[in-house]
Amino acid sequence: MQNPQTLTIAVSKGRIYKDSMPLLAAAGIEPLDDPDQSRKLIIPTTREDVRLVIIRATDVPTYVEYGAADLGIAGKDVLMESDADSLYEPLDLNIACCRLMTALPEQASHRQGCLRVATKYAKTARWFYAKKGIKAEIIKLYGSMELAPLVGLADCIVDVVDTGNTLKANGLYADELIAHISSRMIVNQASMKLKYNAIHDLLDKVATACQKPAA
Image (cartoon, rainbow, N blue to C red):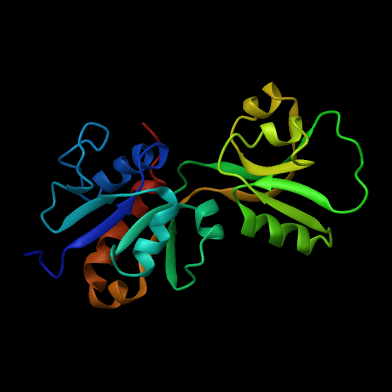
C-alpha cells in the first residue's frame, strides 16, 4: 500500500524530463528506471517517499488538479491552454525555454476581413487576437503548423519558437511575441496543505538548484 505521505510528481518525456532531472536530483530524487527504456508509467526513485508518473505534457495540469499527482512539471504554454485554474504555480524552473509567437509567410499579403490562424494553442490565440481587437478564426491543428499557410489553410500560425530555423526553412518568420515560455513546478492545492513540509522542502531544494550556474 502506498504511504499517504508519498509525493507523486507528474512529468512528460522529452526535453522537460531531461532538463528537470538534474533539478530533482538536488532534492535527492533520481529515477530508478529510464522511461525511454522502460514501459513503466510509474517510476520509483531513490527516495522511497517520491515517485514519478510519466504522462503526456498536456495531461500534467489535469493530473495535478485532480490530485492524481501532488506536483507536476509543465511548460507555461501548456498551463496557458489548460482549463485547470486551481493550481499553485510556485516555481519557474527556467528550463525548456522558448517563445510563443505568431508567424507569417515571408511574402504575406494584407488580408481583409477575418484572419485565419492555425495553432494547437487555440485558447491562447483566441485571447491574444481578441485583446488586439482582431477578428480571427482559430483553426485547431496538432502538428506541422508551418504547413498551414503554405497550402492556404491559414493566413498565419501561433506556435512555440526556439531557434526559428523551422520557420525559416518553410518560408515563415516570427512576428509578434505572445509570451515567454519556460517550465514551471505546479502543486495541487490539497496536497500543499496535507503534505506541506515535504512539498516545501522539495521546492526549496529545487529552487536552490535553479539558481546555481550550469557547470
